[in-house]
Amino acid sequence: MQPQMPDLLVTSASRARHRDIMSYRSVKDYLYKTASKPAKGPLAMIFVEDEVEVGTTLRHHLESGFGTVLALMPDDFSIPADVADRVDRITFDLSTRDNLPDAVNAFIKAQPGRWMYYCYNAEFLFFPFCEHRSVGEMLAFQAEERRDAMLAYVVDLYADDLDKHPNAVSLDCAHLDKSGYYAQARPDPVTGHPKERQFDFFGGLRWRYEEHIPIRSRKIDRIALFKAQPDLQLRPNHTSNDEEYNTYACPWHHNLTAAVCSFRTAKALKRNPGSRYDISTFAWHNSIPFEWHSRQLLDLGLMEPGQWF
Image (cartoon, rainbow, N blue to C red; front, side, top):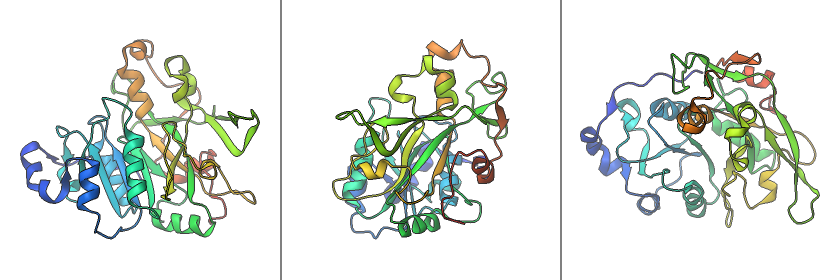
């Protein structure tokens, strides 16, 4: 299920042809203008930080079966022409502050009862059997399990040769760590006791290069898929204010989990001056090629099928 490469780009001139029906000035503008439209399946919010693999990210999530795919991005970024009329574009800038939770929370408040997902560009959602089952089918099963959220592990991807791919991104030469992942009990800040069915998960590049990663950003768990509810809020650390949403499984058996395969950490480590020159390669003895298939992630224990067969 490797994402396809981009086609022609939508430039600023051609983008204007889509603006009236596909582009919105802000999240508030989008929610106001679409308030009367019925929700069509689960919602995917793609937050675009740079112009790396924007088209492939949007294409991947369209093919995964999301009913609506949003591209939240600066005006001067481009979208490939073959997906420009299949997504809703919202003017949004992540560079000034961490305003992603504010945007997600606005959608939660406006569309309670809808399943939602969020990620950044150059991140790709994988779930068990995603090659022949849609995200809608998976979320329908999750709802039958009386689960309103799904834990995802952010699995770092990176190019094996940084001389050929200095931004650390390559779809054809993507690698991941086959081991080195671990979990720690998540303590309750009030009682100090471990929270029930909650762990902090670590691994990948954030673990191997933790000296370059702020402590608050080292976890790899993310509640990436959830059902919007009144008063639900996403926190900056990718958890929610509803503690049950933050659990990895229900009390009686294991549940589905997913993986968000991401070049984001590798990009940041090669972009930031403090780490750029300290890293000549991300490859190590536990690096393996990424096969762009859910079977590999299941075999490595990086996601769980639960009772879904």
